[in-house]
Image (tube, rainbow, N blue to C red; front, side, top):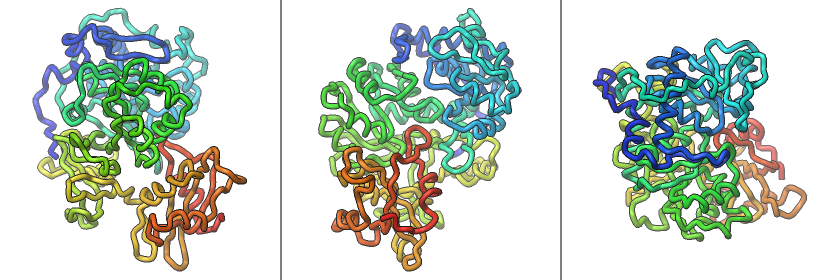
Length: 543
């Protein structure tokens, strides 16, 4: 992949909202399920023009960052489109981070404007040590309140509505090229402070092209957006591709399985993508059987392996559910299921999308044979540019930035294989694989087998030290709600008996631990690092 930072500017690069408003002004582009408000593409462009003037009034110019700490709201869409008009870069930050982590990210992003939703004012104030932010700030009142938020650090910050100019006429901004930054999106942060990934206008558009052409998106598509907008899923999985096509995106402040089911039925949703935890919670909800899912053309799972039981539950309802694969640093939409794909390929992620190159390499960086496991690497114009102000991590993931002629493969850190039919399968994270008695063990395979046990709600398998085998597996289990017993429904012997004939003996966990609920990070993803820190010190037999 080559980044040409000298490419010519085009007027259309930043003209996201005005071009779509010209083509389909009366089409509803965004619905807010929390407030009940709907916004046509003409509305969204008018709002974006006002937001662009807000940015300009606060000194936000080409390349300057706008940091936002908020749940999913229309104002984030305003600021995204306004960034295209002004050359500003939207940098949404997770409201789930602890104040010290937020503080580090704010230092890294170095925003020219800080926008904070009212419920998170205290956390952001703590993140900046209780002082006033070093840049202008604006507050998004909660629940439609017109009152500024409390908190000494933001006492002088106006509300977004008060700061927004009335003028919604077209905004004349700078020329932009496809290599200019569009979004800063941070990684999940499972180890240390998250890294800020620089997503260019070109990368955003090529991911949209890949999604539209491989997934078959249509102008009349409707989707409930359950990914947070501080995550690549909130923008690049479906939201921006839908804006490209003129579809309708439905947002809400919180993700509740019952509400999502009602939204699918009420809005006649046609496409839906969610993490496995959300798909599972919907399939076990009381309203599951009574909800009309007939309008859904496809559903995809992303953000981690989806259990067989969840896939079966959706497919039994006649829904075409498949697994996707992506990451903040590339795409994230890299694979698709071919037309008429066979059901026995459900455990794969499909085949590469039109504009993505894929390879699997060994430790030396050489391609492996079909069927062999190696590290998955991706390349294409949909890849991110770099990590912001982190040259060493950039070189490790993206390759050299000082050689424009170099092939820049993105190292995913994921282990994968490809079968004889060209379907790719994720085997697990490279760092999570462990070797037991000379044999490689891939935790997702073991977890999927354990999750079939009726007493198991969720499970993570980690490698722990063992004197005889070097490393053995330990299963950390969240019991099913209706599991019998005193909180420890399974012993090691019970589990190994269940796995006998399903998995090779060296893959069987040698110990078990139980938790009321597994820790999560990011958008409802299980935090493996937290599990490893708590349970991975030694192979103490909990049962």
